[in-house]
Length: 192
Image 1 (cartoon, rainbow, N blue to C red):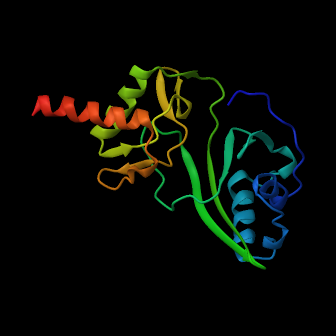
Image 2 (cartoon, rainbow, N blue to C red):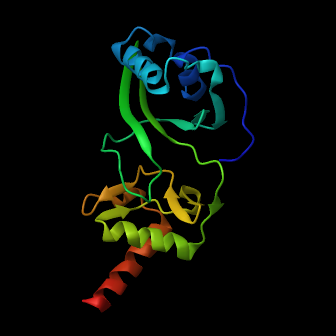
Image 3 (cartoon, rainbow, N blue to C red):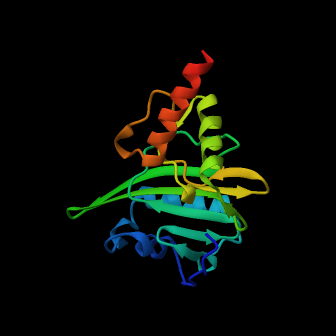
């Protein structure tokens, strides 16, 4: 995430969404969902909040002060994970906007920004995976791009594919996750 920031000027929420969306989304301005999200941004970020202060980091991620704002095609509505291995997430919601045969699914997430970090090696990733499994979670999107080492702590920056044990859909499972899942099973059979 420490790639050079692209400075864009966003005057309002619709400018920000249009930067991410596959088509012009001006039609959503009069919806209650848009008004609710806009009001949430202003209440969360404070009365001095200004869209002009948001910077684009890359693709669907934007930076405001010490927070990341992420947009996604559609996030599965689920609880915010409050576990030490996951970067603190403050808001996650899913919206569906429809107008003149156009549909926009918009997942919005706000989380802490990690500025200084190092990437994890495979052994470190497996330790994070095991820690989550011991806490009753399955992580099916293991990737060095999803975990940073910050002050000797591991932080998962993308928690979209962490599920309570037994609820994971393995269709989107990464090769590394599959390998770790098998390794974890073997190790735990030896213990029993």
